[in-house]
Amino acid sequence: MCSFATVYKFFIDIIMEIRNEYKVRKPVLFENGAIAIAEKIDDFDSQSIVHIDGVMIVLCCQGKVSVDINGQTYTAQTNDLVICLPEVIIENGKISDDFKFKAIFMSVDYAFNMLPTSVRNWDFKMFFEQNPNIHLTESEVSIFNRYFELLKDKFADTANPYREYVINALVEALTYDFHNSFDNLLRSKPHPISSSENIFNKFIEILSTAYPKRRNVAFYADKLNITPKYLSVICKKVSRLNASKIIDGYVAKDIERLLKNSRKSVKEISVELEFPNTSFFGRYVKKYFGCTPNELRHKLNGYEK
Image 1 (spheres, rainbow, N blue to C red):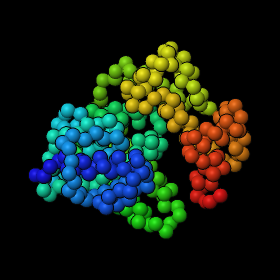
Image 2: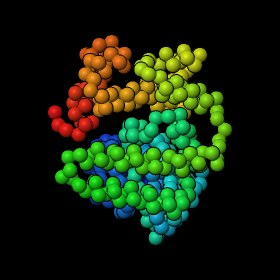
Image 3: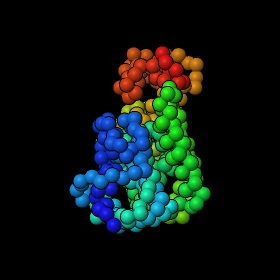
Image 4: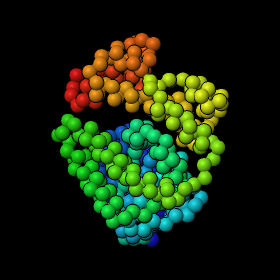
């Protein structure tokens, strides 16, 4: 057995480099500032405790790994999938000499934007915080491997100007493909819902079904008969995201949908989403996406301005 800290220091280095947009070391097959995949381990000097600041999905292809995640010991073997969410503490681990893996790493913002937006998916998050290690069927392993190989192929296709869009589509498709399997897991291993989680789920239900979406926390707090400050505290406790950031994420999906799938003008979209004026809408898009609405529309539809 070799030092598990060495392995997970490698993992966390990738996460930190994704977040800080550094150039990732050679074992990583691809990175674009938001997502990376890897299937090799080099030796790195490391500490015995690491802190995950992103989303890490690791399929154990061979061998065994034992690790403490947030103080709880888990052992993963062949065909086990380990899912670590932001703010996870990993320590006291070991791997077997024959350990092989396939891993996908995502920044917090990338994962939030790519995952389906529903109450059920916040349930998944809560489930995986308590059950980070799950065993996949042979069929599920085959599905994961197919997506992983497709991702490798697309990452290598540097001449394709649409590569990033294809990669994003594959990640989203992988998520949906496993949606049913994870849904069955939730039904088989129900966990008690705390009062905070119950309020949070109601908030997400109101937010996800509202259209157009109000962008102020006070609106949703009023619907829940609580103060905006308390709603923000609950959101931070349950999701580790503040309420405003969650709202912005949902509004952003509506913006993307309208810019990509409709022929409405930027002004018409800003009116439909109840922005006070086109200028304010443009600043909102620029702040969230880093580009103008028209530039975003061009990007979403896969062509240059």
